[in-house]
Image (cartoon, rainbow, N blue to C red; front, side, top):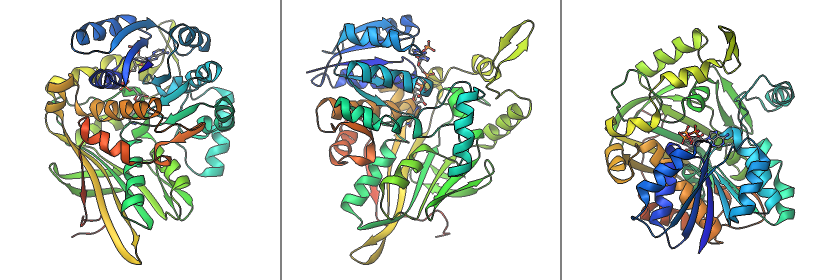
Length: 422
Ligand code: NDP
């Protein structure tokens, strides 16, 4: 029924593509296009004979709009799913706009070089005005709102797990459990063990940037920013157990603060083990997380990119990672005048994911929602002209598809709150 162009062929793409192939009634044809075409060909080879979806591959450098426009015009897809890197969000959005094709992604824009003066000027102004200093924010992509509306096309931003499913959980809680949501705590727990002293579960550059940034949360209509890793809590996660977790800035806080009326506080916590934190601090202290080029023996190298070359490829963690993830949201608020709290979460087993699609749970929990968001757009269920985040649409069909495609969820109507001891 639909032809979809998928850009990127890394860890998340592998899962999204495999899931599209499991849903071949919707995804009748897909083209996998990335910088390294050999990876696309290898995945096509692996999937051929196991799906009715017709797969083609192409080489594209998504940093160049012209290359993207040429490919989109040749392939004529109904939508483009961007599972490359956040650096490519704007060029891909521009190409979709020029070709009048719907756009879907899993992470909001940030630039590759954060020292670039034009970007830096806008960034510094935003830090002062809004009060959070993460390198990513929605303003760059929300700026396409009128252009996408006029063109009659949809951009669906952030359909991974967090952001993505966490925002759908919020829309679902508001639709079915609350008259008003007062607080949202998003808890991202990875209880998996890959056996390495240090490795990242998804793209190391994006992951390390996120984790080394100051933390921030939304309270009473404004951002509160705190030093990196300075707010710590312990939580006993269903099916995983007790873990330390730390408050981080995260992109869905920004869109939920805008779209959930009356919300008083939104926080995001992620679990980290001590070994990860010690390694990260040390790498940061010696400058290995730097994103600007330095001269080394007559050539420029970017420290974090060199570090990426040394670290285990996230895709290689699949076979060796054991344990489970638990990601979800705790909501408090009111229903029929009474106080209410619920916890909606998903538990995902690393080894089960590996058996099914050859990836660990972090890629799995992002790739499945990427497929679901794309399916809802191409099916016309989530189709409106303009730029949207996932909580702005009806959550019910998405929640049904989570159950069907491997991410079943649980609603606990009496959870322990993050700041309470019981
Ligand atoms: P990977 O590094 O594994 O894969 C990225 C892919 O993008 C690679 O195939 C890479 O090609 C390709 N790529 C990079 N630059 C270009 C370019 N200029 N043109 C074409 N292709 C390019 O990343 P992940 O799969 O881990 O992450 C993918 C996305 O998912 C990221 O945006 C990440 O932020 C997001 N994410 C979202 C989460 C969520 O819950 N919302 C959670 C985890 C990730 P090559 O093979 O040549 O390097």
